[in-house]
Length: 195
Image (cartoon, rainbow, N blue to C red):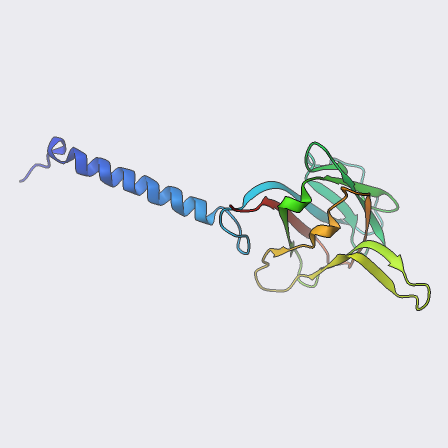
């Protein structure tokens, strides 16, 4: 029987161990961001908009600044976007019933914001940034853009959201939010851009 001598092969074993560690580290870095988000982007902040049972007023915990609650089947729920000097945060998480939630943002011009819908198939959310009604024809205008997502049956992927809907550097913004009975969760991820 032949004996394997580690002392003779120590340099080779060290190189193999180092190579394995680098390969594992690079695979982890590549897979760190969800699909649809460029490699090299760094997560700055994340939050979820969660569908709360219809007609109920939320009076619980905000989840350490990472959740906003809106009723399922909401019509015109409101979220105020305001400028912050200290980073992104949920100031008030309650957008249920007639309450207005508050999201503080900053540095929007140098960040990318991604969004995806999860939960029950058929769930829908429509967000209108800075609603204005055209009095001539009664049409509702969304001056800063919209986010209109319906949950399909396949895998949900992140897509870029209109950054103007988050930029309160000049003035506070109001979102008007409509959901259907099947709405459950909307995820937002804020990333710094890769160099």
